[in-house]
Image 1: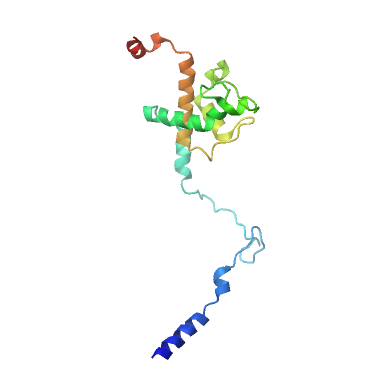
Image 2 (image 1 turned 45 degrees about the vertical axis):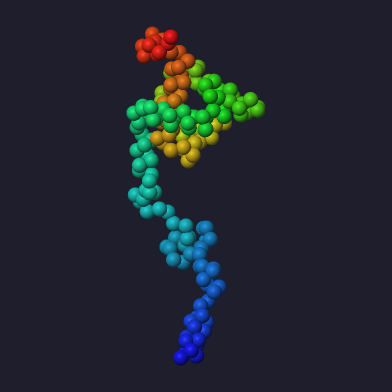
Length: 173
């Protein structure tokens, strides 16, 4: 009985081809292939194919979320992480990278950028502008809108009057 079991194990192991288990057949990028009519392994995506998650991401990019305390906290946090190295904590364009010799971005407090639409800021964050690279893959659309809201808050804080904010007047001694 033991010899039969040992023989079965030896036959089972002998049937395994270790090399083919480690090295799978595959095509190199753009390698010729007889499988497809166009003769290439690289095939275009079928019509109507959308990557998983792209529809929700596109929807988030189209419409800004309502401004809430949570959105502003997220915007501030992301601004400090992604934007302040160049733009500075106050948005003056005097961040640490600029102090080390990198070209200065414009201040958010110029008349031109105060008049710019929220969509403009969103598009610049998404696509980049000048020497600023795109953050589309680094920052989710919701968080880009949060940064835009925080930029608007920075702009408003520079030009705010106590008369415009009665709740602030009550907090002053």
